[in-house]
Image (tube, rainbow, N blue to C red; front, top):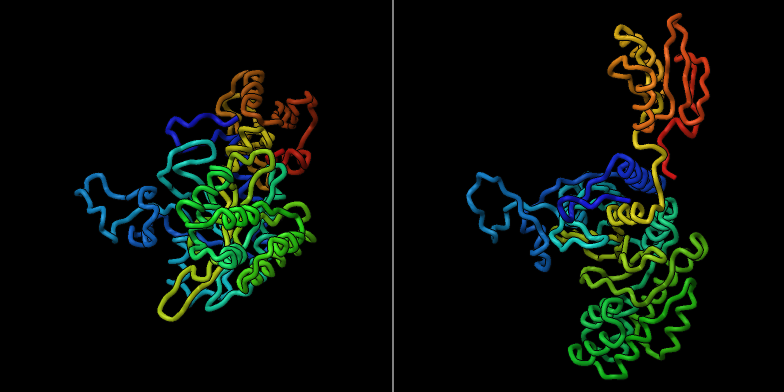
Amino acid sequence: MARKASLSGFPEWLPAERAVEQHVLDTLRRTFELHGFANIETRAVETRGQLLRKGEIDKEVYGLSRLAADAEDKNDPNALALHFDLTVPFARYVVENAGHLAFPFRRYQMQKVWRGERPQDGRFREFTQADIDVVGEGSLPFSYDVELALTIADALSALPIGDFRLRVNNRKLAEGFYRGLGLADPDAVLRAIDKLEKIGEDGVAKILVTEVGASEEQARAALALAAIRTLDTGFVAQVRALGVEHELLDTGLDELAQVIDAASKRAPGKVMADLSIARGLDYYTGTVYETVLVGHESLGSICSGGRYESLASKGKKNYPGVGLSIGVTRLISRILAEELASAARAVPSVVYVTLANADSWHQAQDVASALRARGIACEVASSAEKFGKQIKYADRRGIPFVWFTQEDGTHEVKDIRSGEQLSADAASWTPPAEDLHNTVN
């Protein structure tokens, strides 16, 4: 179980916990690269003007200044601040480097971000995100919306997180349905539907009627659409049965059907059409994704994203894209709290090379060098204490093998878990495959 951080919202991991985090990051990295995504890293800071260009998250952004500096004008758009996600920096990166990128550009990025929100279960002020995006120049084929869903399904399936559901909707579908109902402000309806899991159907219905201007019948129809969930393309018939018609609805149904049809064949049971998913951010224009852990839905979405027709623009050039972001730290906190995974040992060392006497340090280093040359992690004792104390130290460190050099120059290695001790040669001895690398179970 993870320790409670001494500074709320800023988690730190013990070595064994960090090994689990590294396993998650390595697994994601391997999966993303298998799908052809290239890694990038952007700077930790952006100008406040860049971060706040949409103007709705100013309270969440941490400003950056030197302690000795004069008080800065909070309205200075050129002042620096820590990035609160990886999408805004990526948009700038695409514009600034467009001449050096081959479009469609596939990128993955795993970095820390900082956000000034109230710490609670699954929410932190400093956390790691893992993003993947495909960005086009001028246009981007819809097939990437399908591919992104399959990539994320592969990545999450490889992690020790139990069952999950990647829930997918389409903003065109929702907007077309609301317009077909006669609702003039589909964005307001989407924002209300986005609150469904927090305030329930009655709460959303009240907002739709009193704030959005919907009739009781229109509100019931909007909620009926949000109630549709299927693991196959059966949602199409259910939507049609509601009797609403609109050209944009037809387009959204077709696009969502393509995602779900491919996912039902290639990732059965993992991706579902969920027409309650709204994603309240205005820049999503088509497919939207949210992901929950089955049995831990209260944790919220662990992976979300969608299609945006304008990630960035410069002059007459527009860069549409589709992407998803995994909340790695949120995942790690739940993995550790629920003991869904644990590292085989807290340290990478496989072998602890003992010292027979004060003069044997160089001889022990020769053994360690020979082992390391063949990829076997090891460490050398710092002093020639009694062998019993050296073995106890290795045991406390979680190191499975202890190496001894005898007076006649021969060597033996002991598995301190089983007590078995055998002759060994540093030039050829190899631990069992399951011990060679620290594994996460």
